[in-house]
Image (tube, rainbow, N blue to C red; front, side):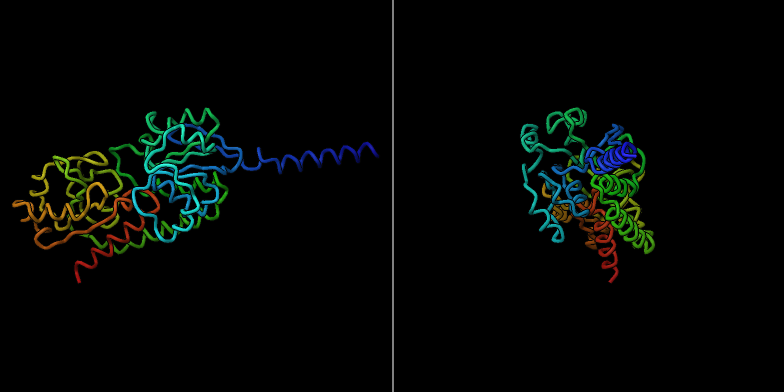
Length: 317
């Protein structure tokens, strides 16, 4: 009898230990750009690289589990500013690998594949072999999203879902996914740009740099119902001659407002060029301006959809 009780006590203790031991409390497997990764506990010193990675974490309320952050392309939105201020910024752009090592991270989360270049923080494989889990946003993985296949909003939702699982906030992630889907579907239903042609003006490389068939800006225009004059050109981003723009004479020009190429500079060029100033959109000042961060497949993409929808509605008033 005593022996049976002892066995019962030992068995119960072992079961209890198994349930509370951190190594087994939150074990999940996922893939990042085809690389299988196994996490055995919730990361507590995550480092984010690029705006869209940082904002997924902030949108899910995970700032207390961030050890550091780096590389913003735009101002943090007011609703996330207080949370963002809690996180140490270790570099204006990509930090050196040595700087990252000093922070002793247990998770690296990047928005662009360039973050994991050898010349920047180092490869995902290198960090995974060190025992540091990594994740690259789904939209930046070419094997998941080929450059010649039109992207959808699925990568945004996948990022939220995966990060929610990794950090054990699946309920928050599910709510954010539903909210994101509902906001985008609402604009799609309204179809504000139906029947209108548009040109996406990114920067003044010669020839001009614009949206191809298959990236975030092309998806923005499809959701709005706009007919992009470069939608049949393969690639996420492409160069075209200004002759192409003049030939198609778009009704609207969507202008990417970025630090390296501001909307004001591009509008000035359009108005002062003897040929481009004769475009219908330029003569009637039908410019739609969007911040770069709202064209990226991240937490601000939905803001970009709503922003452009409102601007289109304003043109008709």
